[in-house]
Structure formats: structure tokens, C-alpha cells
Image (cartoon, rainbow, N blue to C red; front, side, top):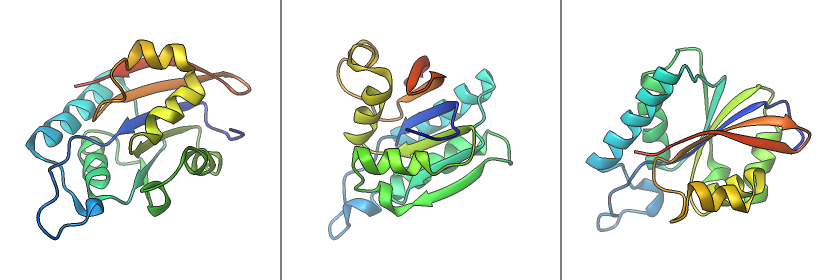
Length: 160
């Protein structure tokens, strides 16, 4: 992933409610547990002093709501971009989005299975199985730091 990013925050959206009759998947909102999960992640980020330069979110309602809740506790200087391409994006799509970012610190709010695939690509399968033995959970946050060209280290993993 050739880019200027040296710190990456990977956040899967928080828990969403089941679709209501006639509601499309993309429109699903966070349920009460999801709102609590997102607030928890925002609090953990604030306490750790983690503030990305930019947050790039899928256009799905649950991702935008997760982003808004997390950002509420962080600096007003975080640029927020909504990327429709992330909604059904593949691993290559996520990598392309990240490669296009000029910032050094970026948070990506997206979906599984792509979020887990991205984590595994950057951190390796051993780290993936160690941190997420049952899969990448809702509101799971991984913080990765670049240690060299194409090399990433898991700095922290936070789950509600």
C-alpha cells in the first residue's frame, strides 16, 4: 500500500439493528448496543490520545453513525470523508482508498469481511487469529503503525 499513512485505525461499524420491512441493508441504523459500543470506542480513543488526521467512512448509515459518535469525543480538526465505494468494497477497494490519502494518520470505518481481510493483509494471519479468533467484531478497533515499507505492527486492539 504505497501511501503517506504511518498510523492506521481500522474500525468495523458498531452493532446495527436488523432491517425493518422495506428497509435496505445500507439504511440500517445502529441499535442501542451499537450506540454504546461506538461511544466506548470514542472514549477509549480520547483517553489514549488517539486522534486521526482524517476519518474515511462507508456511506452506510451504520458506518456514518459510528463515525459521528466516535468523532464527538475527538478533536474538531478531524477531516470526515464519506466514501460510497467502501459500502460493498473489496480488499483492493479499501487498499486503493487508503493509498489515495495524503494524511499520515487515517481512520477507516467499514464492513466485514473486508475489514478483517485488510487487517490480515497488513498485520498477517497470525496476528489476525491472535486478536480476532472469532472474527473482527462490531466496533472492533485496531491501531496499526507502519514500521517499514509494507510492514505494519499492531499497536493496540480495542473491543467493547
